[in-house]
Length: 134
Picture 1 (cartoon, helix red, strand yellow):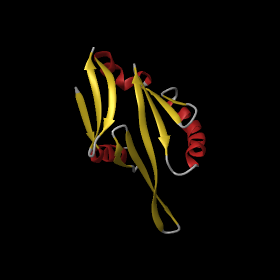
Picture 2: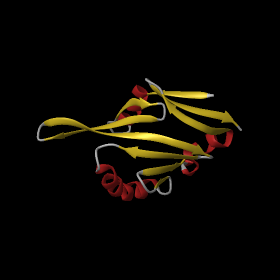
Picture 3: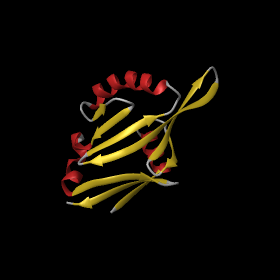
Picture 4: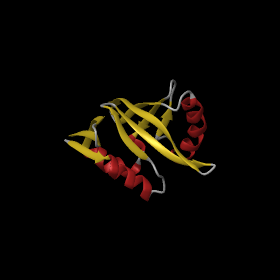
């Protein structure tokens, strides 16, 4: 079964959680994530491409790319904050790779007991999460 999360829905969910992000299609395996910022009265956006490399069990392996050579520096700075807030849910690897351990998110336990994540892809309007019954 496929669960489609439109980019507009994802933006609203982020905004309700206190973070303003934008999402847009780049490729079947890649979504662009933008973060707006203001500096000296000017508005701009920092954008990163988030590419899904694969799903193994309950782990989603991704690569983050964009913002010139700033990705590794930004990941290095963010990794400490993310580790503190999310514990072992996110693992930072080499070459801008990140692993999201879904089974370490308590609220997902009932879902993961019944459904197996088989893939994540993107289209022009939505992220498509593919699941199978266990």
